[in-house]
Length: 633
Image (cartoon, rainbow, N blue to C red; front, side, top):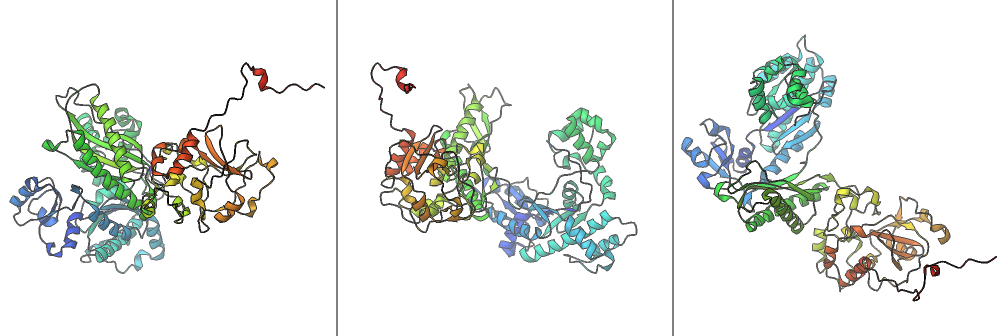
């Protein structure tokens, strides 16, 4: 649903930069012999020559279009060069084009706020750069700008800047046009890719303008030209009007061009489409849009999908699971790469599908999308995605026992956030001193797979400090089954407690704590500012917050663990000298215990099932025995 946002009072300079036939350009850079030849990129599916997903301008002159198949394109243009898109895991692999697009984005982002909208297009907010250029280089002293061809455009800009009636907004747009031209030239020089651009006061108009003159050109839309531009623009060409809303405008109100909306009052549009949509329609008919350019160079989500048209539809659970596993394999690789390169972590896994039922009595029922918390690791993602599909299929079929088919599958990772500064894996504590009895035969591989589930599950600071449980995301409460040991244990803040009554044992003989016995460990503890007070005072106080930390050896000597107990809140505590390390039992996933060494498994299972207390009450005893006798004065 479109959202009506008012434009800011101050003038903005927004540019939309779109690569020209980008997939074809990438293939032509890869094989320069293709330059100047009619070229198209086709899907890996060879049926009827494959579907065209990108068509070069040389081929377009012959009437070749993206909606065609390869065989039809060859009939229209016999000399066309059909390049098959790279294939991986039985589907198109777009990494070649994603990486090439990142090259261009890194150049365009140098002059202002940059929002990457897709593989081959970005929005730029050049307001600050244009203001600076206008103040430092007045229009009358402008001598030259770089361009791909000729000086006609340069003269037009210079003329426009020197107009006697030019206002501040138009001068800003002209400066923005010069900046964009320089960026496009730099991109051409460094990457060999051409691009087109639109420059206006908002994102909506900039996107419309970028498609008006292609390839390798740019278009400026000053405020005085907005009305003429929209008067003849078909409603279906406007973003968010290509579907049902645009069709409704045509059938219900007789609106064919965006400019036709000017005849309706805001109240009339709100009456038909609601307050929000009605206001938005009233705004766009006047070229008003307050959408801001979001500073984002990286995608908001990762997704991969596959279609199965006609006879290729998947009709068995086994065939669906096969493709789900392949899609999850690709998704896992991409989110792991995002984590490694950009220190970003995804939190939600979503499965989408399109399906049909044989002899369908409810043709309008759609296959429901399903989501769950995302667990890192290919196997875990595959397991969760299969469960999501099973759940969606049950909802889709309902009580009917009929045949079904899947025509489209996609898996997505979303709700991506930056990893907090200073986070690290618990394996940094282990330092190679893993006992021979452990099942971690390949510590290096284990480290590769390890990953905190969320920014709040990490151990962080200069070295690592235990984070407070209060900052946990509720949606990640069930995600304790990650591949890293630190996702099994959710540490609580260190606190002082009084002496307890439980029976002590030497946990160093067989305990997970023996992993924390390295003098070179990166684990840090409280410094001298956290000096202990007496045990009498400790029962009602807690550690003060400290910024500096010492080494693990000091923990071993000062805050050793030798008392084992589970408190009434379900937290396991190891205590000595009045200090405790607490573990929230609710955040331990029993399903991952089998991955740990046997002696640690036994210890943790004891936490889940503590030994019962002996019944010391005498037969025939009454409740009176639970109370101390009253002292007689």
